Amino acid sequence: MPPGFQSTLLLTVLLAIGLVFFLRAASKDRTTVVDIQSPRPPLEVLEGLSHWLEARGWNRDGGDAERQLLRFSGEVSASRPLAVLLSLLAATGAGSFALVLRQLAPGLYAWPLLLIALGPLAGVIYIRRAARTEQLELRLLEETSQGGSALRLRAHRDELIAIEQELAGPLELASDGSLLSSPI
View 1 (cartoon, one colour):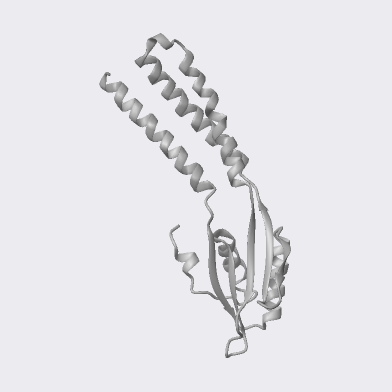
View 2 (spheres, rainbow, N blue to C red; view 1 turned 90 degrees about the horizontal axis):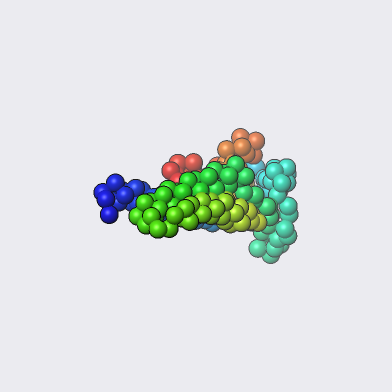
């Protein structure tokens, strides 16, 4: 095998590995738990959070009065432009691999170029795995000694960051700040 083909084959295999890892990461569960406090009364904080969540498309999904728990659910959709980009990248990688195969085995003629048809499969896999129902839980913890409220939120990391950024002022929410300082 000529040296030029080895490097092209290596880069093509690395492209395929990167695509597989990206598809896995795009559908990975990033549910996180964070505790927040507010000097405001618990009812006011819960109502503010509920209205904000419902305005963003979340639906109340019941709760548990004994555990002081509210549940919300929402549909997360896949990004169509990202699905198209992934399909194009996969088709390009498959085309590169097909050209390497064609050079290594000229007797295959143009048959390896049919691998390009597998490109849209990456977009389909992404759309199926990324579109899902997310859950968000609000649990009222014991009241603080100053008369405020303490909540435990369990949700997707991005939603918790949005809550912390958008409601920190109006509801005077405060957490340890770990969500905003994390590099992930």
